[in-house]
Image (cartoon, rainbow, N blue to C red; front, side, top):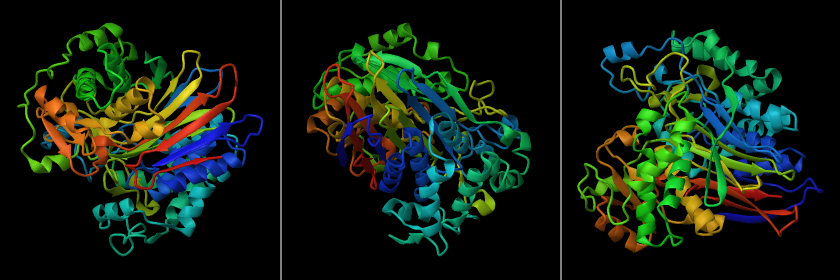
Length: 548
């Protein structure tokens, strides 16, 4: 657990905080703040470090979403999500026998990555430092090397035989604390510094993607800017305005489930079994129709319509789980406790600076190293976010050229009714991200817990073992994972209400995730001074919070 306080003193220009899932990233971010950089510089610099040190979570071959709070303005959302190549064809996939999108080894599941465009857009709009300085820590780590974390060492067993992965794994799976150098990543970052997006999409990476894709991508596909600034989705809950990225992100589920939990009267005692039941039921009520309603272009007004949410809240009972096809009782399959919601891997980071600019940023490869395809000589692993597309004819999320798939990434922030930034928050966890954030928000905003206590608190999570990646709501065997340090009364209380409960015997990142938080609070009424409280999830093995 990382927990720290930092005074907010605009006159010094030297105060700020960064939380990330890797201490190397948070340290790099705070170093950029110390050089006079903004929270955007810190966020982009930390994100680039994560792409180098944690390629099993994220990278230049993935996507990035963010929500940004700038003093005096409403928050902004940044969708930097890739689009399917012009050569994809859902009919052909169906003719090949596919009923759902392929998971690995198929370029049709690889949208053009959007993360680099997102970094550049965030830096261009809110950055202060030159790009070579912002990317400096990541370039140095890639060239000079870094020590492999436990998670990177374990994850390397998945890809050491993948073509193009030999720079990461030159001698097979990485031994623990191996010294890792990635000169190709440094070369790509330097190209972006020199030439902007053209140095990436029009350079070595882009050429390799076009060649290896064998017709899936055209040059015009890469010429399109994948970073889109847009109005966030917003909803008032527990005395705060909650802001997240709009569709095709599933972020609306965090807002909807939190609003529903408030409406049904969730209490302020997270140890109460009823608290856990209402968390579960609010998530189920908000997300039951996600496969039908979430797609590229879905209307925020419909997804967060108050009558729609009120009707969902009205169906919740305090004494009984909503009807389902699952037989109540504790799960009989002992292996189910370690089965994943969606084998997704993601990372989130937060940054805030002395001027009050706050950035909540999530980036991802989708599933661990993504598609297990590498962009040739760059060594960049390509995401497989396209697994979120549908192959059902006529479905609004059906795979089509230029379309964005439904997205699990759900960064968000909270403001007080007067518009002041109060919290930056996000998490990894695949389909479970909104559930994770809902619980942490309920603990902080409603139960009054500090960020460190809230992020460490026990969680419940919906799982459907039969469902594939990012298809939680397609499963007909919905179960409830409960962390091992949860109050013992939770399991009995949930089981008595008809839930099928699966105790988690070990940390399962995609069931309960790893959150990052920064809280920004007034020190006293009428005073512009602020203090920060940051928390990096103890479930993130290398997590770190840095402040200055």
